[in-house]
Image (cartoon, one colour):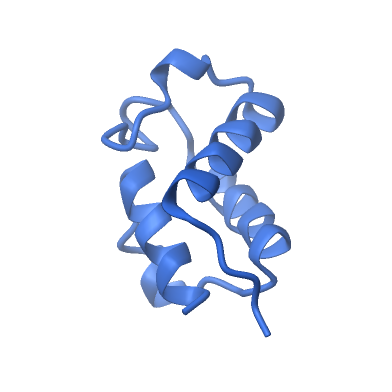
Length: 84
């Protein structure tokens, strides 16, 4: 059984990962922030983020879902869908 998280818990964990592992300024991390344009992640960073999300949730983001992710809010939506 997958643990349930609130949107706020997911957002806070993403923020923790992005600040700690990717050295992104915390002030830039908002639900509307674009991972590539605003946070300057590249495709390798995006894969690393997906792996870290998998460790956090215990669920793997399917590649077809991963390709649609552009913003922090998209990541949160995808995680919520995975852990239903």
